[in-house]
Image 1 (cartoon, protein in one colour):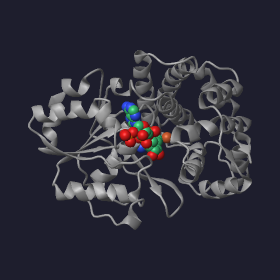
Image 2 (spheres, helix red, strand yellow):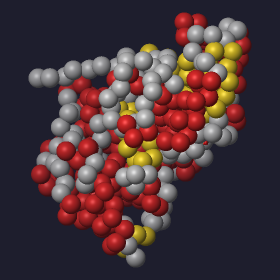
Image 3 (cartoon, protein in one colour):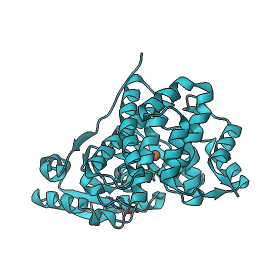
Image 4 (cartoon, helix red, strand yellow):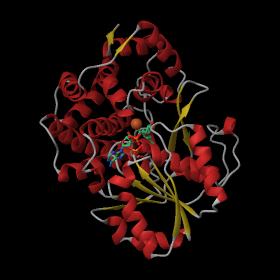
Length: 368
Ligand code: NAP
Ligand code: FE
């Protein structure tokens, strides 16, 4: 049995954990670059807690708040240029997956000269700035992964930079920053987290350890999704979601994702469908596809969900995601021919071919 496990990120959880663990910042340097999106970090209290803590330690800081959803290569080079010009010692990324992923790329590009055409090569040196992460959505798990996912215009998809040096140094998980998250973003991000744990179990790299983490994550997230189906969720459930999402991140840090993520990138790149929503629209049909070859694994996943049939998951996801986008046969052919080239296709326990991918898209959508 092989169950290797590597997770070098220190995780600190709980209400007010940043302010209560100020000492964690001391060894990181005397000047920080805060990497955030345009608005949410300023509104949900996370940026204020970070600044209070930095000021109490006399650590100076500057802010780069231009990270958009699905960050671009231009954005991370701009952030890295600022980090170099201002000679910062470390990065603090606050936000959803977009600022966190951008934060990783900025920490890398601020320390190493990497040409744009080599950014996805994975062929990097060892240098990187220390990184502090504060997730404010419960979805991507980026706070505990070695991936930074960037929009890749050359390939018309999203591609991940992956390297063990990209694991954040410390992640602070305080669910209070997610209390004001909209219903839509809460649902989409929770489904992304669910998808990570489910997909992790359906990869060739899954191990006993990752399956245990995935099962705990699936149980936790599905309870929250069922609660969301009936209205709003409690603060305690938001804290559970943050925990389940982090576990999902630990899973994919070891297993990677499957065809669901690569197929979803097409919907995000061409149709601007939110990342988690894209996964949620495809997940049930992907499970039906895998079930034909490996019913036992699907049963294990459904059991963790407290469900007997894939249809139950399908109706939960459909209820949460609402009306589906319409796409054309030509769209599907284009997305399928791009996603079949993704690395994570070979990573699937049951790997779909081009025709399978087309069929999964078709069953998942109303064709125009
Ligand atoms: P996001 O793109 O980071 O954020 C989506 C929206 O939510 C933004 O408008 C953001 O506003 C807002 N927001 C964030 N936190 C909020 C809060 N607490 N209250 C109110 N609004 C808030 O969304 P995400 O789903 O978390 O991240 C998606 C990205 O992560 C994608 O690029 C995806 O490919 C990537 N991803 C990475 C991994 C990984 O392992 N690294 C895994 C899965 C997905 P502001 O812009 O104002 O902040
Ligand atoms: Fe994801």
